[in-house]
Amino acid sequence: MPRNLRRMRRAYMSFDDAYSVLDIVRGPSHNGWYEVNCPAHLDEHASMGAKEDEDTGSLVVFCHAGCSSGEIVRALRELIE
Image (cartoon, rainbow, N blue to C red; front, side):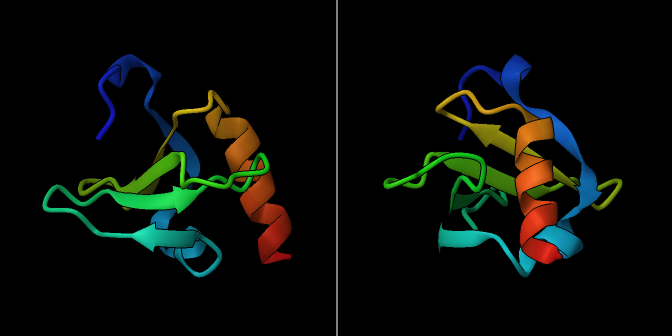
């Protein structure tokens, strides 16, 4: 999924907590990535990738539009509340 892995970040949220509010378009792929509409910006074309870290169970996110993991987690928490 992400070509520039340095921009990929582990978010401070469990994948299980986020899963119920993620706007999943497609997935999971063979390597566990879901194509998702990013909750941190108006997203018309599933610009975010999300997956579960196999070791920790935490959410791993990558927004191709450049949203930070902090922005994404804040938006997801608002959706959960």
